[in-house]
Length: 117
Image (cartoon, rainbow, N blue to C red; front, side, top):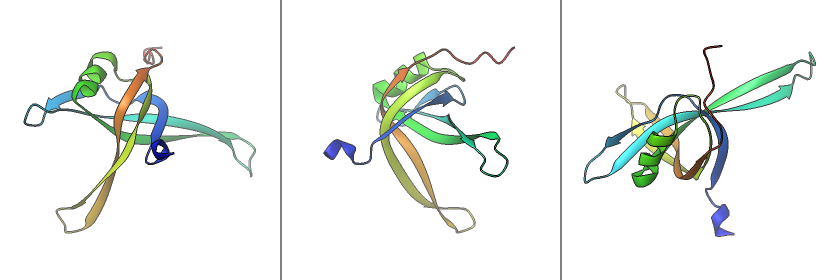
């Protein structure tokens, strides 16, 4: 049952081309976002509506390098990881919390969307 704690699995499309960067001591970091979509019927109008949610994603090391080689903007991807939150103080003194999904594994499951049509 321990593998159910803080475990996130999502399928979505990559929002921007992932880029890796070196962050010191040889660590590689990749940050990008994915969009997940959900369709639901409006109870009042009876019309179907789409709801898109954006998720901030990060990966370290070999996983980060593989992501940069295999994914591009619009790629469909299945990710698995955990939620990581960081609290910080903004320039105007307000405490804020940022929640990312730290990927432990991923699978490219489709081609990127052709936006030229």
